[in-house]
Length: 105
Image 1 (spheres, rainbow, N blue to C red):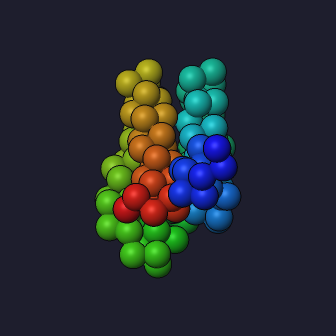
Image 2: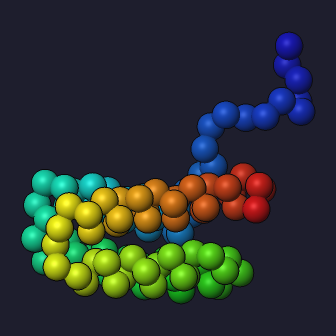
C-alpha cells in the first residue's frame, strides 16, 4: 500500500519563477473582465521580463521565447483574441515550469 516509489500527485512548491507564472496567469485572466486596464498590462510586461530573466538563469530555452511573444501581445491593442493568447501563454509557461520542477524536463 505505501509504495515509496509511487508518484506524488501534488504540484511542486513554487519558487520565484513559479510564483511569477502563477501571478501572470491570474492577471491575464483578470483582463477578461477589464481588457483595457493599462496598469495590469504594464504589470504583465514586467512579469514577463522577470520570467524571461529567471528562466534564462535556470537554463530553460523555450520560456524566454514564449515571454517575448507574450510581451508583444500584452503591448497590442486590447481584444478578446489577445487576452486569450495571454491566458494560454501563461498557462503554457506554468506547465513548463511545473514539468521542469517535477523532473520531467
